[in-house]
Length: 97
Image (tube, rainbow, N blue to C red; front, side):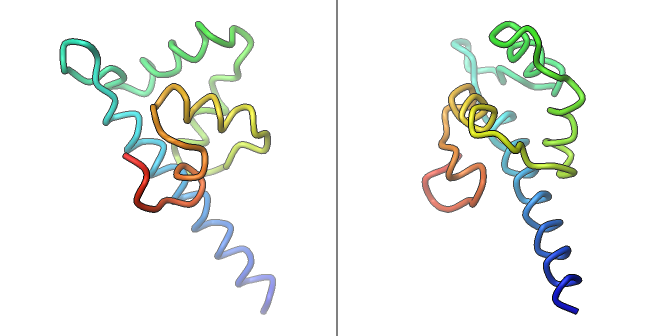
């Protein structure tokens, strides 16, 4: 029974991370006031410019809520590029988007 609760909690955590990641990506505006990363592919392209060996499938699974990045560097990269904090991406709260 405890394992079921842990699995439910982990799934909810992944899904919430994915929703916040998507929300932050869509909220980013360019200098012209238009969405900077309207499509997921736009954000992935920007990631690849910074980290050429980044795994595209990983980002899709993060935004889909299937996985949360296991390394702090990836979470920090997302937070920096999306002008938010890693804490907000992971846990939500008032300081986010």
